[in-house]
Image (cartoon, rainbow, N blue to C red; front, side, top):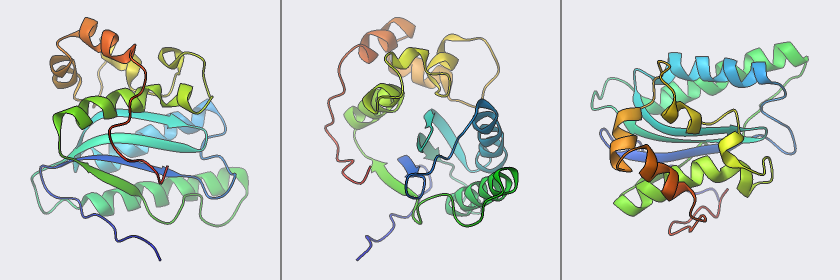
Length: 186
């Protein structure tokens, strides 16, 4: 029996992720990653603040904070994102059907340690799953954006402040992933 979906609460922080259906990939080429992020920005920026993300061939992770405005539905924004991306993907690759698993997974972040470990976990995920030997070289995560001057929708300054600057963030990310939270559904 499926687990009940955790509702998005205004002001709360969440770790959000989903996988492709079966053995499919969500992203086949660089263009897919960039297109997905542009759609994410369009649909989600009004509804959430984004603290970290990582896109991998068959799944993705985001750490978000839901905006306080109850008129902006985060669930609807994610639904619009995934549906829009799937339609474009299906058209481009001449396929039919759903691309993503049926339920977007989410876990409320309710401790400082989970917030810290979740950011690190998200960035280290490509190494954890064997997509890269060095997570810092993975092109499709927010890691490099924290060390760039480019405009971004990330809460870059807040995250860097959380880690006490760039040096603190680098030092924390050198630690191995220690999951003090359950991601058994991943």
